[in-house]
Length: 432
Image 1 (cartoon, one colour):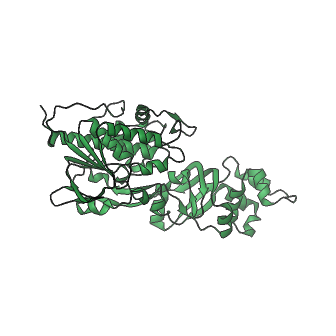
Image 2: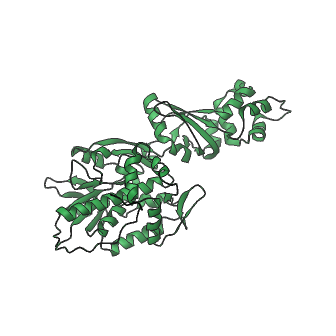
Image 3: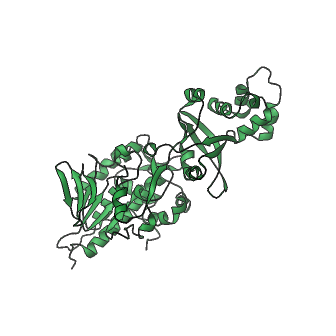
């Protein structure tokens, strides 16, 4: 059972072994690297395999704008961000929560701070120093890194098969942790090629789909040319979930060339995807002026214009900037724009028809993957004893803001510890 106080990875345990058990971790993202650290700390020999020429590539790219390592939101609110999987992910977080992530980073010489939004960043906001220190520590502790090794599954004798620079290669391990990522940013390694391998072995895999992604909107050419890339700040989104329940959330988003994206959209993306899958589209409504009263706005707009344009009056009366005024022009025709009541109502509830999620290759992360029901509590595949899965290849979903990477790290810790325990009990290690 986990303790009440989450802890970072424990110090390595010295075991009286004739031959230490060997763990293979496949995938060098945050979940894989944490599985490596946990298994090595437990006393196992560890080999890390990655298809690319270096590990942590997506981690580095994600950190270019400032590495958002975790979030300061207290539990159980933190857990609730994982929606239907909050219970399962919460069990991982018992092993490594946000405080433990910060303590772990401190152990690598990286101090963190909490931003105004609750997001937690390294003081220098960079990913590279943390990753370099992490990899150096793992190498110094004896972890063997094998890059340019693309996993192809198992042979008939149960050996792991890789395409390597020298040709085909086989390796054996007492336990295996798969941390192969989802389907987003495939150029960085997470291309979802593992799905067919696991399905052939009887592992239930939910189809991968884009998460933390934008959605297509049929903008006019004028709007696209003038406002693509413009932030849409201080709005409240209103939408219906799959059960028809109404929700609202305040935040910010961005008008992209294809549609709409950004943190507010990412946070509610699961509901939007579900509605599109069911109905072919979804209506998202934005309150463009949350601090303005609809009736008061109607009254003000009904007064004589005195030569001022509608855009100027909306900027003065409702605080709308150029992109918000342009959104009104997207939603209303010329006759409707002349109706103060219609304009006021639309300012408070602007309809946006979202047509489809953006392609998975563009998404920050993916949903779907190995169903948690196919795994036990230690993240071991029920159909493949000794094989564990971790990170984004699991069927869970989380918004950005530090939640995604924290749960990935925590799942890697759980899987790495469990793999080492199993290998110690059933592998080549002979305990006294």
